Each structure stands twice: as C-alpha cells, then as structure tokens.
Length: 435
Image 1 (cartoon, rainbow, N blue to C red):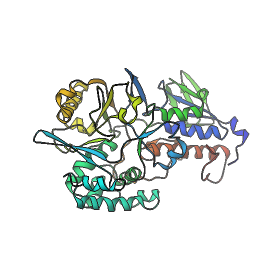
Image 2: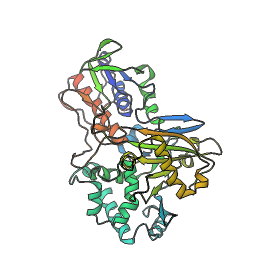
Image 3: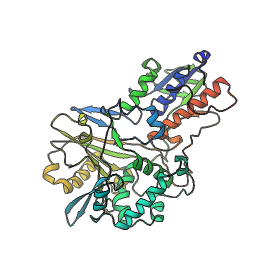
C-alpha cells in the first residue's frame, strides 16, 4: 500500500499500551497516520512488565517467548533482545513416600537417544511416547489455521481421544499446559492446545536479556515516545472521542486495545520469586510438578530464569520462580499472600530440601488477576482476527490468549482502521507499508 501524506491529517487514538495496541500504533504510524496511544499505567506493556528488586529482574508472571510464532517473529527482533532458550523437554519431580525423584524428560525429536531413555524412567511409557509422536506429527503438518478447525472440545478430551494414559496426562501435560493456560483441569479448548503444542514443537522457549518488558519497549521505541501518553485515566470512550481530565477530545477514530474485566474473566495466577544462593536445578529446564493431580500439592512448575539469562539475578545469586494456577490455589483454600507463600515453600522444601529452601529470601509474591482471557471449549477459537462492526478493538481477548494472538489482533485492527479512514472498498491484504 502506498503511503498517502494526507493520512497525517487523520488523528487516531489508541487506548491501551499493551503489545497489541502498540503493534497497531506502529503500523498506523508507518502508514502516515497521526496516532496517540493512551494508558492509565505509568509504563507500557500491559501484562508484559518487569520490575527490578535488589538487582533481580522479576517478570510479572512467568513469561517466555516462542520463537515459532510466525507474525511475532516478523515483528520482534529476538536477536536484538539477546534472547536465550530454555532446554527442550523438561524435568519432572515425583514425590513418593516422602522422597522426591527428579527425572529428565528430553525431547526425543531433538535428542533421540536421551528422549527414548528418559521415556523409560517411569513417567512415560513407550506406548505413550509413540502416541505423542503421532500427535506431534499430525499437529505440526499443514497450515497453522487448520489447527483451529474441527473439534472444539477440551484439551483433556483431546488427549484422552489420542489414547494417552492417565499417567502421561496427569504427570506431564497437566502441570505444563495447566501452567500455560492458567487452569488446573485442562478445560481450555483443544484448538489452543494444538496451536501452542505446535509452537513448542517447532520452536524454542526464550527469555530476553532485559526481561519480558523489553518486548513492548522495543515496539514502543518504533511508535515513538512523543506518541505515547501514560498515566492518563480515560473516563469515557466513544467511536470518535475520548473524555479524560474533565474534557472531551475528538479524533477521527478511536481504537480500544484492552479488555474490560468481567465475572467470566477468572483466570488468575500466583507467581512467587525467590532469591537463592545457588540454582537448585542441574540444567536449563523447567521443572514440572507431577504430583499436581494429588490434593496435597500446589505448584505447577518451577523455573530458574537466571540459569537461562544471568542478567535476571545479581552475580553469585539465582532467581527461582514458582507458578501457582489461581483456581488451584482457591480450590485448596489458599487465597492470601501468606498462605500461598507457605504452601509453595512446603512444596519446594519437599523437592529441594527444607534446609535449602529455608535460606531463600522471598523477593515478591505476585497475584495477577485477569491474567489471560478464557479460551474454553465451544468458543470456536480461530487464528483469524475478528472485530466489531462499529468499534475497533484489539488484544489477545479478541483472538486467543498468546503473544501471537495479541500481535495478530493489533495488526488486524490497524488494517481495518486504514480501510475505514481511506475509504477503501476492498480489505487490505497482506502487509501494508513494511514495518
């Protein structure tokens, strides 16, 4: 699309400085429009934020980037963010008779020898491994959009249809994908499971050097600080006007880039960060809790971000991050910061030793509400962004709960805005001005 200098006369307001709103703004600015991004917070990023405490980088929630995300990989320069990967596969802890066993579950498609050997450790059977292999083969073939066709039952239903054993589902898929989807029953749509599984199978999970905040900051840099207004509480949003600080401000178009919490938005998560003298892990893997199906355990998974990115912790220290799915904590009656922290310490003490964990200092106890949009079965999720007829809205809640969903939605809203303001009779296809 050829940029029209007259576009600069068109004023667009975007409410919400998360990655979707920023991506939308970037595309519009690169096509000549006069764009202002507003946010009530004092920093950009929405849910993708990082705090600095005692020399540690603490992401708000446990975040990783997937290198296989197609659109995200086009828009985010992983190399410039100095991203480094976790090891493929996972470590799994099983508590039996009061004794913790930790076993490596290597990815047999990237490390065939270790992968096959690790399947014999009691966590997965050869039969399970073969069935996961067939599932992997079917999911990684074809076009991505096809993953959102067909059945729309729960992830649990999907895994059971693939005839995976209860042991494989409860000991591996539940702690891993329950922690990703932020729900403890695997009730998320199988469509989203298929998509995320494919991304994990074809790419790597990586962390930026300067924390997850560097992702929105990199987009905001392209948008330009002069086009972003932070700390502005919007009291009213209309199609062509905003009201804030007691006055109405008119625009040619207003784009809403956030979701308003409702009773349905119940996905929340507890993330507890610890300062440890050394890493409790022997490799750069995520540690999955295979006892999550049992009533006595609460932590879904543990990671040591500083093992992957040393910048996450001061020299000579390690950052240990535990994830607790909100509905699991609530079900077990842990709803205060103190009770959640103690329950987490109990779990970790059984795995790593009470004497070891007692030396760890708690850096932060984060309770993140409305952490993800609900993507239940039956919602007919797609990978094709949608929007309303009257208002333009973007965010992962408009597509599916992922960084890719947010980026795609932001791009789609920008294309809709361009069509609307330039009076195009045909929908813009493909990229507009290269960004």
